[in-house]
Image (cartoon, rainbow, N blue to C red; front, side, top):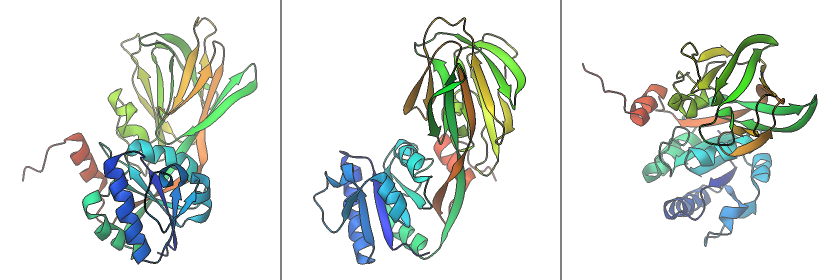
Amino acid sequence: MEFATVGLIGKQAHQGANLSFKAIIVYLKKRGCRILVEENTANKLDSDGFESASIKEIGKQADLAIVVGGDGNMLGAARVLAEFNVAVVGINRGNLGFLTDINPEDFEQQLDSIFAGGCITEQRFLLEVEVFRNGKIQSKDSAVNEVVLHHGKVAHMLEFEVYIDEHFVFSQRSDGLIVATPTGSTAYSLSGGGPILMPNLDALTLVPMFPHTLSSRPIVVDANSTIKMKVSPENHDNLQVSCDSHIVLAVLPGDEVIIRKNPNRLSLIHPKDYNYFNVLRTKLNWGTKLY
């Protein structure tokens, strides 16, 4: 693969991440790459040999974007970079590292392999969500992991109806609903009792949050479905829709929340020895082979 221009994005004001940024810049300069560093990070680096750029400019100009940090940093970058045809790889300076799977201690070996074409590329789809009030759109955004309808206050129930492709599915009184992609199935959805979906599945999982019924269960649906949540006008408080726990959209009683597959896709790069089930065993403490 030809990665002539490389962008660097990630966690700022973090000692470990700054060490990685400096080491990666030295590495990329040796390879003769043009280096673009996200402007907030660039202002905090005392290195040279790079250009400062916004994440959008990196998306437009870079052949490869390297995200240094945790999954949260990757999610923030991915929502922007998915709009552009740029490969993205993560170096883990966070906690779990489901999406940032390169070890910072031996990143040179891993990047050598990626530059030589020894890598696995995955196309991960995103979601887009729109909030409608009286038939008019109020706000919209995108999510890599999940879209969550929830109350603005902790442990407060709300009432809503769920429709899939205009077909009524169920009504519910609960703390909310998680609509997760396969990428997000190991995140908030998993904590809520949802299933793990392999990343290559074209599916969504709908996970009720603390439903006030014994019969409510998660359901997996076609990712090309349109999910509509009609918020009951009987709710008395303001509600929220969260995207990847980063972006919050206001929702009022009577609003409709529409969730669809986003036309943009994230091109996620992994080292050639990447194995999804090994990631699950490592990150979720699954047992080792018995024989």
